[in-house]
Image (cartoon, rainbow, N blue to C red; front, top):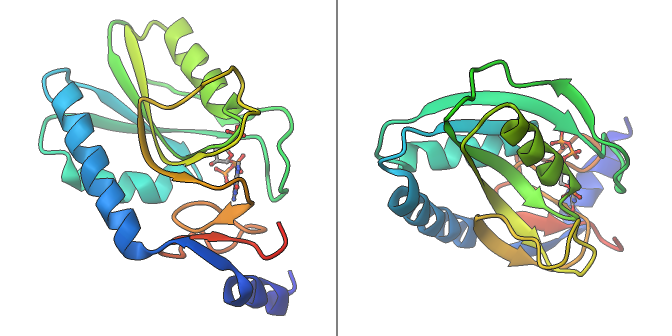
Length: 183
Ligand SMILES: O=P(O)(O)OC[C@H]1O[C@H](OP(=O)(O)OP(=O)(O)O)[C@H](O)[C@@H]1O
Ligand SMILES: Nc1nc2[nH]cnc2c(=O)[nH]1
């Protein structure tokens, strides 16, 4: 990997939401999730890798009993355009009659979340809700009007990184939401 290019991408990127805006969004999402799920004993799935940061930052804001688990599905790899969903780790828990919450970094076209939700329902979950830090604004969703049940920030139609989202495998650790220059 050309590390000069990776460093330059961060330096030249446009910041579309700073750390303070992300914190505010996390607080609001946590309140909404708590209001909806506090009495539901949910099983909370993190979609690896992108959902890792949202999970780490929101789970401690949820003051009610829940179980955590992860699954790994990817559609983009290190590319900036998605292809078919590649399941790397499928859920192993017993989902029958469970309320499930899926955490991911972004709903872009929504094919990833759609496939995961359908899979969890087929495995017997009684209710599957979703939460994403970023809802990308465009009209190319998997179905018209698609939205997660809980969204943090609506962000412009650019290629984004930070808060779990990667640029060529890097900068998931960047604390805000950034858009790659020219993309
Ligand atoms: O709404 P969509 O257009 O389907 O895209 C959203 C998905 O793309 C990213 O995952 P990616 O495939 O890049 O894998 P990653 O989580 O390892 O980054 C992101 O984490 C979402 O899971
Ligand atoms: N890093 C990253 N991953 C994505 N997956 C779907 N959309 C995006 C995006 O804008 N950035």
